[in-house]
Image 1 (cartoon, rainbow, N blue to C red):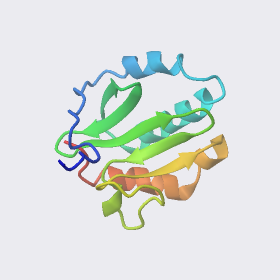
Image 2: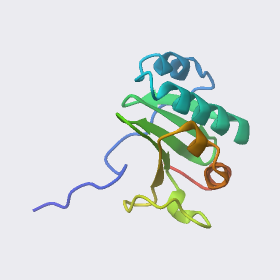
Image 3: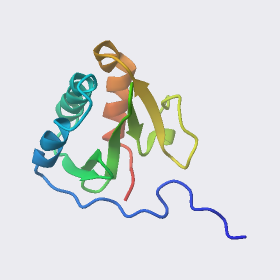
Length: 133
């Protein structure tokens, strides 16, 4: 029996764009309770990491850098938002969730959690760590 494809190995990365408008439009399609959390996450990522490229694929926004690939993915669910660090296993202190490949993530359920220092630190580390190419 063939081995199952794990992680992003069987998927093609999104096409990068310097335009953030597709993500802006996507915000309006989210559950109303998650919109403030996702908007604050987006603002935090954009303020922390200069020179980002953006994409929207599989109904999720991706943030990437030339040379590093896609570094952060936001995955909203019914009651929480996963902030996925596509190279998170290589961080000094990796996010606590995830075991597939190099991807690690953290669940965010409130605006207060967006302000946690460790989340800002992981975003900054993502800007220096190769992601998904």
